View 1 (cartoon, helix red, strand yellow):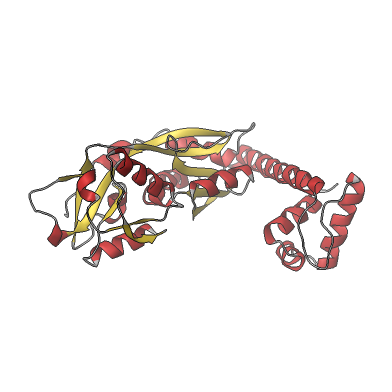
View 2 (cartoon, rainbow, N blue to C red; view 1 turned 90 degrees about the vertical axis):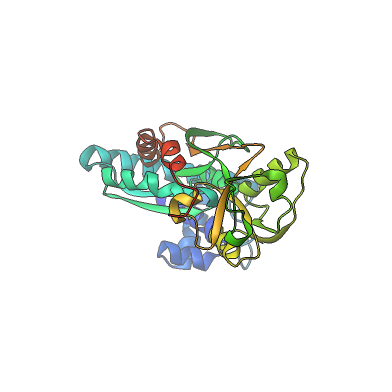
Length: 306
């Protein structure tokens, strides 16, 4: 068994197509197929379901694939550890973040990049379910997600900040004297919200249910920016994390009211796979995050336009 064979196997699982997997690995399709057959012969088990095109993996093949991902992740971790001993942390840090947390990711990655300039950072917008799968499959190094609403399994976590909620609404519809609004009042408004696949939406729905409301979302999207765009149009309001204002401020033509009764919060934090030794890149980001006070920074963001 050689590492290259495992790389071919993981590429085939990702691409689900022999030719595309071979192209991703920069080898010919016959070379990839031969390497996988040699792996089957060495392990004495069938790995790939045979056919004219890729049809999936056998039960034994799925087991081999899981081990292949782990071995390749450990190989990468070893390379990172050795590089760190010689020249400092280097490589590519892969972060998956729920959309509601994307506005604050740069508050962590910026000081991290200053301390580790040889690291390239890749940030992906993902659901909490995708983050859990990505950590299990070694496709990301760190997640930024909710810690106390739908906790992830088999992870190590670090709280970052408490997410609280505002109602963003057209400025001409919000009384100038008001700074807060109750959840039951917000439920009566025409709303645009994230889709139910997003944990933020499930949190918001749960808070509305806790006060006996079931609002109708006239518009649903998986994009925070799209929510802001719809509110600015003057027809809809939206419930969103206050952390969004740290990035955009209060968008022109809108007002931000703090949602109360209840004053609900959820914990957002970092997660990495619970394994030893941990990924050096993930460990480095955790170390950086421990030096930050994001709660203080986010709570200082004004709810009124500058």
